[in-house]
Amino acid sequence: MIIQTDEIVDLNTPTGLMRCHIFRPVAGGKYSSVIFYSEIYQVTQPIRRLAAYIAGQGYIVIVPEVYHEYEPLGTVLEYDKDGTDRGNCLKFEKPISAYDSDAHTVIEWAKNYEHGNGKVGTMGVCLGGHLALRAALHPDVLAAACFYPTNVHDSTLGQGQNDDTIHRLAELKGEAMFVFGRQDPHVPFAGRIQIQQALQQAGTNYEWHEFNAQHAFLRDEGPRYDAALFQTCIELIMRLFGRNL
Image (cartoon, rainbow, N blue to C red; front, side):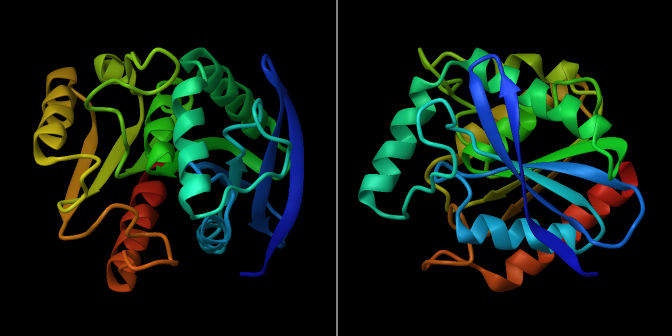
């Protein structure tokens, strides 16, 4: 399936313009939309390649720039110490209310996008895994694929480091999927158990997977990339979205 990868849209949010990168099939028709939240580095080349891969399976993939209030539109942080420090700093500087208003804005836009069929799901990696989960609290999100979501178990996302995501899981209307690496220091065993117990107590419709892998094992740059596991996870994503979108 041939896809278009160079479309952008700048959406008005309560905290300023947010650039979104659109990946979608060229062929005519209406497609379900997936809002894909990046890691702390914004829309890097690995994120673009993964977005293109998902779009090539017949989805509109929308990748927002999560730090649009703090960096010029189009900014990509590098996979180095400076980029990591900046991304982690902004993760805790941005208020939770701004993450939420961003999500509401892009979900409402996706529901009415001319090439979309009105169905919306989310997915994300690292920071984006948490944002995909939090965006799925919106009642119109039908599915969420959350890969090694950080700061869920300890409720430390955003300004003040006191988010309430784990306490709101009963609000999830769609199906959620969680995928973790057992060797991921950012979400240790105790943290994973805490998230799963909260999902159980909330009566959430969820799917749970753990693999022998490091943090960021989907990123196809660097030493932690696991190509075989990448393919397995693509199949998990396609089944989740196939059931719900």
